[in-house]
Length: 249
Ligand code: SAH
Image 1 (cartoon, helix red, strand yellow):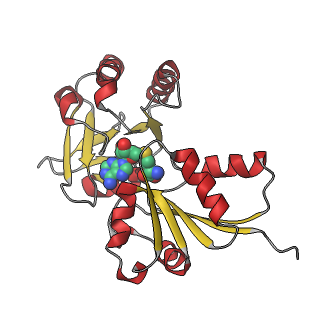
Image 2 (tube, rainbow, N blue to C red):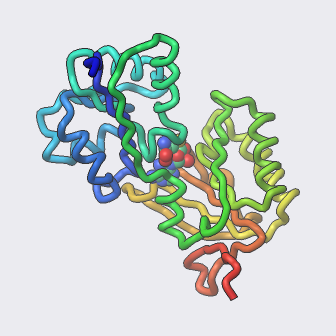
């Protein structure tokens, strides 16, 4: 068999604590020579004694392409892990790496190691809101036009999906987030159960079920995920958890 030039693993780290790192992700990191990622994800890795002494390269925000190119370059001579939070295929770097490999026709041994994405991690903390059909929508307009984001949201509402909102708000998109809340209230009404989860499985974790009308936009940030219920979603009597009925009689 032709020898591959590079070996690169794209590793999903899960929501942010060691317990939610899969065994496969852990072993892949342990067996690598170099680990590359965004600075705040790299922090988690510093807590893992088995990774002591590894060449860990932290990049600042908004260096996605540079991170991929560096990983591909270093993978010529080493086993490299490029890490993303959650799953690397969900708003992570996996598709950009595949695009570059395609465009540059690179001969590479590529491994994609799945991780627990934020929707799954956050759902587990508030009950079972994703028990039936659901979708993920990323509210960041950095790579997707805001009009398209709204169109997708309207489609998901029309289809009665439970909706997880990734990247819901940031300081420079505050007004857009208010627009989104108005759209949700207009289409779903005030009393749809939702859940807000901040920093799931990390320091300063917060979780709370509430009704759409009680959502406070200024409490939502980039470390939050919002789960919008559908017509079958309820909050339990003690206001402790939120779940979507599947229709069992
Ligand atoms: N690849 C990641 C998503 C990256 S997009 C994954 O699969 O989870 C980043 C967004 O994910 C954040 O803005 C937030 O909405 C959500 N997110 C990621 N980790 C989270 C966590 N621990 N708690 C709450 N939301 C989280």
